[in-house]
Image 1 (cartoon, rainbow, N blue to C red):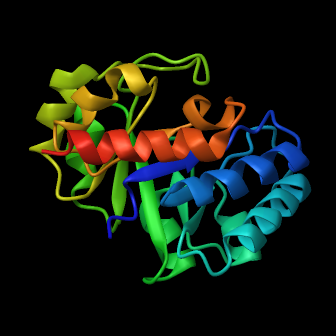
Image 2 (image 1 turned 90 degrees about the horizontal axis):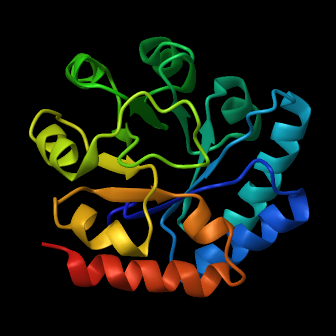
Length: 208
């Protein structure tokens, strides 16, 4: 079982009830990992949201990952944390969360990709494959060629993120990438369960 295959990243603009509904339905639909994202800096609200999602994920074997905040991950005893390049250094985060939690790192260019090989990570998030409205500060678009090249230069499982949807999913999966991370394609649909199930079916059909 590949835990990275269909990786849901939550939309921090959605209220708690919507968030809970989306995650509950998406897990039934087949998402394999959930990252809770909260960009507004309200730690108390972040903990409440993370705790609510942890409750939903209990007993499902779907890992709960916290975006950016090691303190929140520790507070709710999440399964892991995903760091950006401007967050806490990965080695320090590893010391704090211990050896048994998942640690992911966003990679935005080739230099970061090569540097990451020396870190004690579990996976990397390659960002952004395509430009996307949910991330306005994209420094680089990797594209399919960049993704294919990156896969040859890292020791870690790679999760592709950024602008991924049904129309480009086949090309991404055919590179042999370990997983895809999605926000809009699941969070912004009327039926997250069906959306997740359809995406998973498409992924399995396209796998090399």
